[in-house]
Image (cartoon, rainbow, N blue to C red; front, side, top):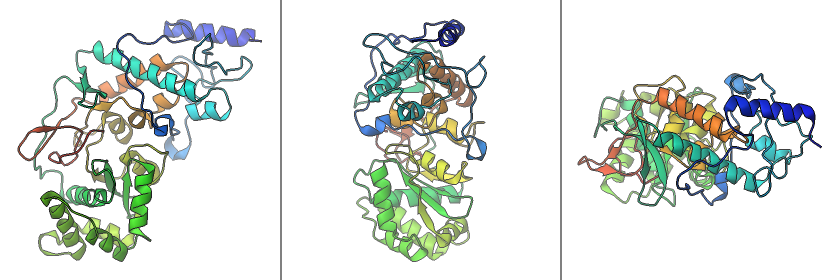
Length: 376
């Protein structure tokens, strides 16, 4: 039986949010939910020092109880009224304790996305964009201008972009995002989005020593002139040949200390977030085949970074998975979506398109600003 205390807390929280305990679906067309298992994979949110924060919600003390979402045919059918459901429990927490099931996770994800869609529709700064594959994203109405063939990013970043491009040639899907970074321990970190892609990279790198990495680069299957140029550039970096001498010492030093595949995280997670989780914080140097999406940008640079040009916000479980608001959304999807949207709006002035070498807009977000990257 429901306790009077739980009922009172649920009613109080509902009044403060200005909604009923069971959030309603936002109006507008539904956003397709990814059918792959990775769409249900949610990462825990680490706080400073590696421990997860217990922050509760705005206006509530930490440990406040989460309102139940019961109701005929509704989400939360498995919730027991006697369970203590804290406001800051993650989706993983609730799954582990048996409070919700996989269907609840999917419905909750859809409510969160619907709330973001509603926010974009009502914004003077943001808008929805529909890709050729039907996927939805959110972008600024005024897009930032890409910088084709930009040289202002520095040689270390350009070297890491080349490393990531070479590594991507080993993957079955050569449009998949790959990122590279120099970790705090001085080693080279590489990661791809999908778990099995990281397994492929790890198998190709072997023990990850300097000789193994040189063989890994030599064995990359370059199929285009662009890939060949990238492969040759990394080979020159490793050998310290000609123009690379002195400019790429940090990259070459990182390889000599060891190459690690950052496979941290679940089945589906953006590559730069895997690197963030592995390193414990955002590395000083991180770059790859795509620019960070809007969600990743807010995780990598919680105080903003004018030197990094973020891409759009993809409305998918993989893109949203690392966000604390997304992880702790259950039963408060509209509020958590609003909190993230406000944070994104504050940190990102403009999202950026990608263009090819001729300046033609391309799908997806390329960190290189001219790479022909596929959609998220």
